[in-house]
Length: 451
Image (cartoon, rainbow, N blue to C red; front, side, top):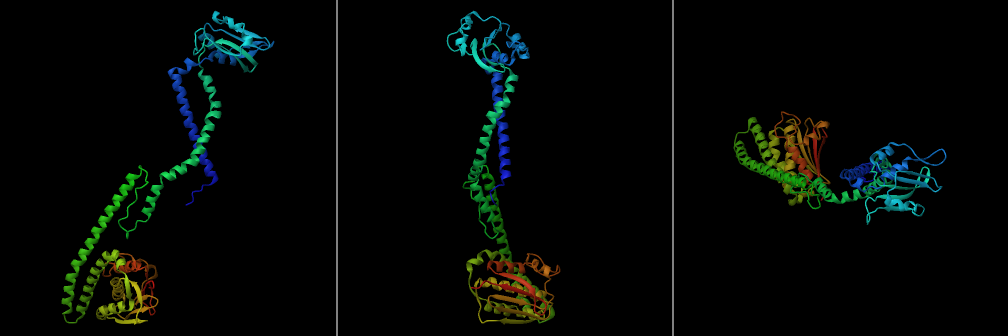
């Protein structure tokens, strides 16, 4: 899957990050300011309360002189500071004064023309706040000089009124830079942090029923995910244990079945040749086949280690000889048609014999109890089993190879024979398929890779 994102999605992500970070920064700064106000730090240190009120109230009268508007904040300031005093003057000589300048500050009144900015206090050292201030500043009516006391406090409304400008020029640019940094840094950080988890996911995708003992690696897995990976490994270990227990049960059950089935076959062979004896022989053959199938199932994992050169013609000839009496007793003729004297593939001889035996047994069971069963071996490496029965309907030709599936519910057997043939052929990197026979019936074809 591509990691590239559409441009609109990328900018949408940047916008969302910027908005989130703006909100977070705003809440953090608002919290800091609120804490400072609550603890009294800002009111204690703030020294421009009086000047702020005067700057907002200053105006011109009809003659162009300086005047003060009756604002609510000015009224509150006069009420809170009974000894309020200030001098406001401009460069044209207009002057506005209220209250009495304390005697200690009177010498500075005559020096206002020579003072630009000053913090004045009778105490020695730097006072916070000072007793008085002198400052030139620009206002709506022009540049004015204000000399006043500093007993005015911090106005919350004025502080909140400055917030939009502070947000626009302070918080928003910082949030934008943080969003861009997050956009480029987050994928790199996340990719590095989850690289170990990616390796674990790759290992999980390779888990297969035929490959047990696989565990997910813990190297590089984030510690938050380690308990999950550990639990999955523990579950895999339990599954492996249960599978091995299941295999041992199948093996033990198959071995226990083989002895009584062999004794039963021996006793049936000693009976006089009758139709009932033939049916009993078929039933005993099914029991023997089922026991062998159970053993084959638990041998599948080790078959690949035993591969060698196998002559398909010799294998087919031996199986035909072994099953011919059963086929004859069931009412069939048998024909063996090799195209060559020898046709070699690489595989396990016992497994190939078992697969072919299951196909011939299937033909005996479903060939209609009449006609001919033909076993042919032809190049490049194909064994075919043909019968003259009813055949296999096209919709059922894949399902008959599923375990425990039977074309006719009343059929004998456990439905494992054809499934075992498919598994054995898969193990040999080959395939088994079914089609229509030349003269009706079914044709089961085992195709091996050439040696």
